Image (cartoon, rainbow, N blue to C red; front, side, top):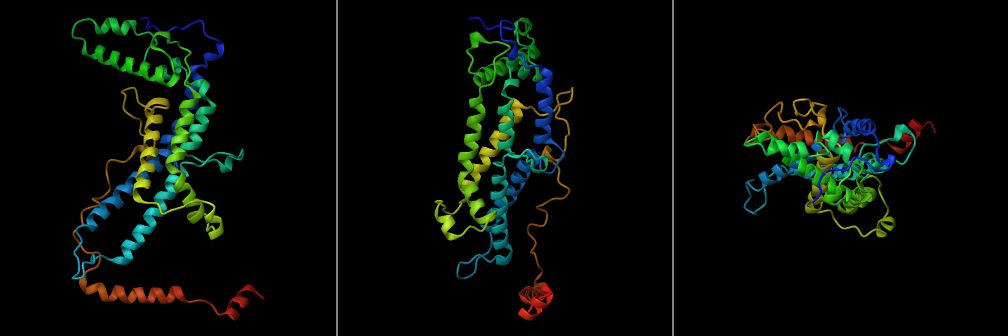
Length: 325
């Protein structure tokens, strides 16, 4: 079977120019891995960190002592706040991945998986076999690699050939090309991006509706009745996060590629590098109470003072005076 890649007899429009894809890739890499705190990579990393922290705390609750009535002896004020803020922040973080760039006003631009996928689809003509493989350092023609790999115990050449064959096979699937009809001008199908956008939308649809009706806006009961909304359970959040992380990784590994140094190591381009070292041990004092027993009365008193202070309101007359009425 013919496996060599045809490099001619294709329309000129198929040759998009490696430089053009290189420029767009630089934009997409900044969007994915840049220093900005809103880069998609940093958003995904923060989701991962928050989810890991909350699930660890949730596991720790299973070991909390119980009262004679069987009730967990935990600091209810703290844990109820943790639950509310965790679910709220995670739903908003997932919901943001569906934001779109619908305005020509640069001041309203957003970074999200959906906006990135839509921009990549708009530039799908750049994703030719030649351009994709060039960025990955894989030759179009594997003849020389096969020759080198056939010379005795050339392990390095065998690894390079295996990597190249996998890269070509992956492009075959992306472009819908038969192995025997490969061409430098094979182009990624728009359906690839359509399906990723659809997968993201399906996995986050209920969460998006919840955010729209309860978090981003305080929808009336009549407004909410038009949407069939039930409570968001943890499994739905975990499933949505899995889809977000899977799409992010696929784009990083296959279509955009992380910026790398000549050695092959990822370049340290900002906060989205998923920090591996913590400034402190987050679990160091896990066995210590939040408040020592002798300080509990003081905390209770402070709690009462705070409640009283936050409950204070001006009288109607004072408010009118403040308004200048």
